[in-house]
Image (tube, rainbow, N blue to C red; front, top):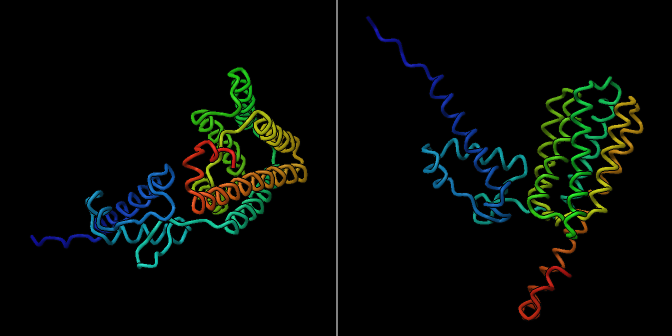
Length: 263
């Protein structure tokens, strides 16, 4: 009996699997801060970590570069990308255009009671965080509370976007939000006033979607994203100013370590 030639399908599937694992591995390291902007990526080390050849690693890196997470270094390798102020503005403009369209389309459809309940729960969770902050006497949310806030915010927007059932738009929006979250300045702890502002925007968006009022939903969502853009650009400008002072006046910061929080 002659043996049947081995199929190349299994080998191809393994290659795809390694590429996907490499893609998610690098993305996760960037998202959790293990790989900061400007950090180099080693194909050889990743291949050893994942027990694979360098080809699927290179393919994963090229995909991440196409999505803006990595960029070519002057030496020819790949490094974690830097975002400029202009990049942040462009990403927010893209997010506003796509999310406004999506929420308008979502608001033209009847809102399922289960989805309304989930959205309301995430709105109320922000109010609970505000009350928790006020009860603690602290001025801003701590790191753990910020993680909960980010989860509520991401969940609210993601659920709204999922209602239009357009996977291409959802992927672009998710990739855009990821780039903003990772590469723009990490937000400082939010105070009670900012939490209330976010809660009100989310409530107004939800109310408009529930009433099937596309114009109001689009208006409130645009205002919400524009407010977030202003906040992020202010953080970017403050950090750039601080970095400049550190570079030109390092002794000043050594003598006054608390200045970094005041600049």
